[in-house]
Length: 103
Image 1: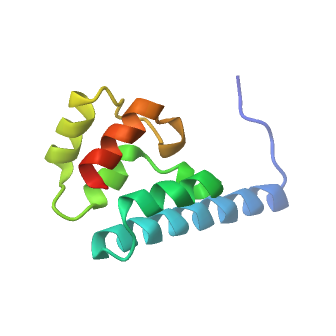
Image 2: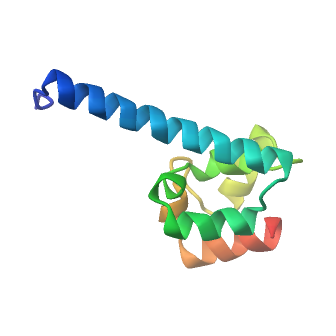
């Protein structure tokens, strides 16, 4: 199935929307790295903001101080969190476990 044909205006609007989402997500991850916001604060913001809720969990964990790609992957595997899971898709137990680890 081919993607729908978009007008130039629609295509431009979609590209701008995607660029804005990437920018917001990058800023949030940078705030986590610097320690400006905490993991529990991020989860609270994700409940209200769809752009933040769309960030992959692995990417968020990698952004936390003291956690790299290997440690983030190991934590996700230990707690049954899929590598493509986004914050909005975390189950209650998974969320509680991550809050215990990083809260």
